[in-house]
Image: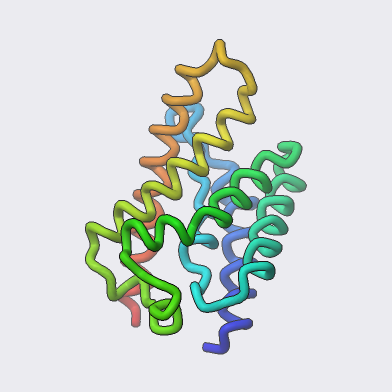
Length: 167
């Protein structure tokens, strides 16, 4: 598939999935999956950095627009997009020369799990910190971060397995 077409499909499918389906799910009354963070995980490493950051911000801003959440999704997704390369180097042991041939599915599951969970937890922590915006609710931030991260990771790995199995 063409790279630009893949990125556009990924962007639009995650936007519609999050806005029309996942934002309407409240598991146990308050746990909501935020699967749009998969855009940062699946975006090719070999692409330019500015368009990637711009598209990440635009995806978060679009979700904020439909969710009426005031920019917290845009900030949290942009922050995770900005620090992504650091965690690629830490967990996946990749350098700039490895980016051209990088395939997330070819990496060992343990490394991919640590990479994905770290990005999801950081994203959710920032998101819930800004949503509560109070130190009095810090325990709520941690609990929401933990449960939403687990729910998002389960959906992420199940979806990845289903899509990968079809190929």
